[in-house]
Image (cartoon, rainbow, N blue to C red; front, top):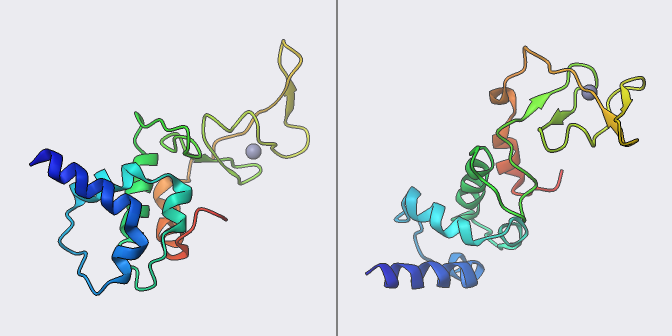
Length: 146
Ligand SMILES: [Zn+2]
């Protein structure tokens, strides 16, 4: 049975645009199964799914976003783990532990580390919570491109 499920998941991954174009009902795919299917999609592949009536694309992105906020999640294809996401109170940019040293802050907040590399020091805005981020916006846009 597991092999059959695996085969179906693989098939969904390869032919998602064609599947959602048929008059089928995708509501029978439970959350667990949707997570398995979304695991196979890279962000670009998820973005490329043609789903005019949004039968499954939002679900794909929802699972992708959930993954990003899982502290144990690592994927070469992803834009980085988002579990450390915060907003800088000075430049108001959204940053993670992976990006905070590479993305510039306001002028004057530049440091040079002992190896001579330029790094940036941001200042975490305490009042900002990740829940303030309007994730449904990302879902509505159905794209990772900002
Ligand atoms: Zn900053």
